[in-house]
Structures are given as structure tokens and as C-alpha cells.
Length: 308
Image (spheres, one colour):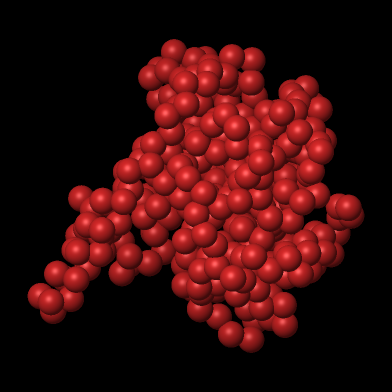
């Protein structure tokens, strides 16, 4: 037992040692509009805080509006930026996603940055309001639909960016087209990994389809972060408490999202995957163009949309 704890301590120390990526750009954002999903807590909240500090009009899009208002109030007080707004968005319900998009498009004529940050992890088996396995439905399909609904506004506001928060866990993921909803076999851990691979493949295919539009997109691994994401796993909650000195804070975890949203000169790297504020390698499955295209087409079919 002591040996195992020692190995875990060494592992988390290793992760922390290499957790030094910092967004160093001084870009300011007056007049820019940003939407961040799940920004009522964790790295999303810290991302919102920094973008508000730089002068952006920030929309916190989240399911728990009361928690969102609390976060927005804190950010407004901290940054002296009154333009931090909260809107209801439940990524497990396509009706809520469409309602959010309809309201936002009526309210705003521009959108410069969309950060698809929200997510779920290691949930017991369940389905969304539309019958999708929860990890797939929230982490991938929900953000896929949201991006589709907001894309024209991003295009007219270009240069604009879409940042998709993925994970190093995508290396373990597979896109199991024969059992996409995990009805035949389900593992809470693998379901999360599969959805994170979907995020990387979505980013890859989206970049290809956005060439020449002035909108670019990036996938990011935030690092091993202390957040509420692990709330469905008692084991991970315990490990995070035991090894909290060795994992990233939410502020540290937000740095790569900020880098991809702000850093100058990233346009040639659209579709790529970043960790610690630099481009890094992805799994062979995440480089499979045929899988990316097929996942795109299947996602459109599941959501009942046509996105050429």
C-alpha cells in the first residue's frame, strides 16, 4: 500500500512539474463577445474571469443559473467588468440548446470566441432528454449542436475561434459506431474517454470545413485539475483530495483554453490539439480522417441537422 501511494505521489508530482503552461499574450478584448459553456465553476469560471478582465463581454452558459449568477457576481466584482452575463444552457437537452442559441442570436450581433468547456465524467449509465448516452450527449453532441447553431454568427464576426475542451483521456477512447450509445456494453471511465476522442475528431473535421472562413478551432487538454468534474467517482474524489498539492488549480487548468482563445498566430494550427499552451500529439485514432468524417455525419443524423 505504501509503495502504491509512493508511486501515485511520484506520478502526480510529475504531472504538476510539467503543468507550467501559461497564456502569456497581452491581447485585450474590448468590444469582443465570448460564450463559455459550464463557466459557473472550475476552469470555465477561471477562463471567464480572465477574459472578462481583458474587457470581453462574457456569457456564462450553464445549467445551474443560480450558481452561474453567483460566479458572474464574483467575476464582475473581481474584474470591474459589468458585462458578465448568465444564460440557461442544458447540454443534455437539445431543446435547451436551441433555446439558448435563439436567445443569444437575438441578443448579440457578434460572437468572437466560443469555448465548449462544459462536461460530465464517469456518470452512472443514463441518457439525455433526447436518448443519447450522457457522456456522448453532453460532451460531444451538445457542443456539436451548439457550434452548428452559432457558427454563422462566428463567421460574420471573423476572425473568430472555437475552443473545444478535450482531455488526454482521448488516447484511451474509441468511436464504437456499432454501439455509440453504449447500450451493449458500458464503462463509466471508457464512456468519458470515448467522448473526449469525439471532441478531438470534431475539432479536426470542423477545421477542415472552416478553411477560408476566418473561423479557426482548437482542442485542448487542460491538465489534471482540481474541479467538480470528478464528483461522480468516489475514488477520484479521494485521490484528488490526497494528491491535491500535485494537480493543477482551476486557474492553471484554464491556461491552455486561454492560449487557444487569445494567442496571436495560431491560425495555421487550426484543428490541432494543445496541452500546456503548446501543440502536442494526439492518438492515432484522433488522426483518422475517415473516422472524423463518419462521426460528423452520424452526429448530424442523430441531431437531425444538415451541416455541409
